Length: 506
Ligand SMILES: Cc1cc2nc3c(=O)[nH]c(=O)nc-3n(C[C@H](O)[C@H](O)[C@H](O)COP(=O)(O)OP(=O)(O)OC[C@H]3O[C@@H](n4cnc5c(N)ncnc54)[C@H](O)[C@@H]3O)c2cc1C
Image 1: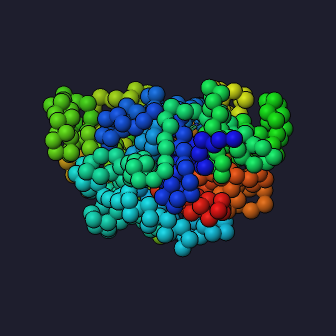
Image 2: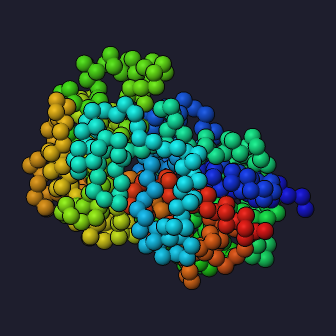
Image 3: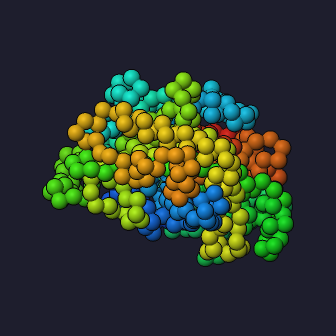
């Protein structure tokens, strides 16, 4: 039978673009990359501020979580990019590897810090993340909080604050699609098919052989298939393909190829909650006096690559210990020098800023399950938020310390008073209620196909356990979320996947 490719990669996100490009570069044969969404050639994808409009657009999967018990039954938006570049095409481009001991703590053979570091370096050689130029003065003021200097980006390794690093080039988004995919398409045997949503993978005698698209079209892979559809997409595709908890698959009428109880388990994200500040002449916002600046913003961006359109909204932040100032950081703060609404509308009137605090190593776990064998029906996404009370207590302590830090920062004439929840909300009980009412996530879901030994659904070499010819390369394989934003670690995983697969499939 003729084949459509030697390797088919499913999902052109942060990890999938790199896995496909690196497989092609290593000369493994014909590589075909399938992406459910459209191309990323849209001005809003390239302009850093564009993400404000991309979230909730047709380039977002627009998933909703199950009602969360820990949030009084609220459902959360689970934003996921749906185009070339994946979530890396709608994210804020904040760049952190994570903490070294995050990887040691995974306790997976071959994934300790010295083993992952070279892959980070290889990825960074192309992405060239750097501190943002032209940050708002409010963000510049953060760098004094722990005695660092303005040229030093904060790090989760110790208490620090200031301007973050971003994967932007010349004030434009520079995603895995830009840095890896397009150059590899020109140079190697790599084809990309956008608008090709995958339903499932088919197996012959336990060997992954072909991919079925939702319109029924089948594409054959002679040597292997790589799942890079992300922490929501990859476990869903695997379950529809017959690999997952056997009883759950049988309930939905899916023939079981291999029973694997942990598929879809271990779903977790960084829980977060924030403080809103509002006052005249503070951060960017919609006010009469700022109207001329907004009107000029597109032209300023076009001709100088500066101004508010060059901002990915989050410009900086901090890592600190929630409970005292001598421990290791256990919370991260994202600082947005824009007025962020707290009443439910996307654009808020007034001038102000926003700072959140999120738990670096959450203990709560949820899970992902299918609701139907039909790929057009969204899965059940239970983020399990605050199932472990320790996460609430860390956020509570973190909020208190965040308040103290915001009071201490030398914001000068840009300082604004806390507007929500407001300084009167200060007792532990009231702050716990604020966490319940307003808690959300940082859009970093991981862990649904954790790699590991024995019962883990994915092996340390990223092969799906119990079958052959299929691997996973995306954020779903992380046994535990890293201590900061997850894009760089996802890319590192994509890079290592290509290393492993090119060696193991030989
Ligand atoms: C709004 C937002 C802001 C964020 N900000 C940051 C940040 O500033 N810094 C940071 O480090 N991290 C950030 N993140 C998280 C980061 O972007 C992700 O952790 C990372 O992109 C995950 O990479 P991935 O390869 O696992 O999945 P993704 O990049 O999501 O890629 C999965 C790809 O698979 C495709 N796909 C899914 N299902 C199918 C299917 N059935 N058929 C075909 N294709 C399919 C998707 O369309 C997508 O292109 C943010 C995320 C979001 C949503």
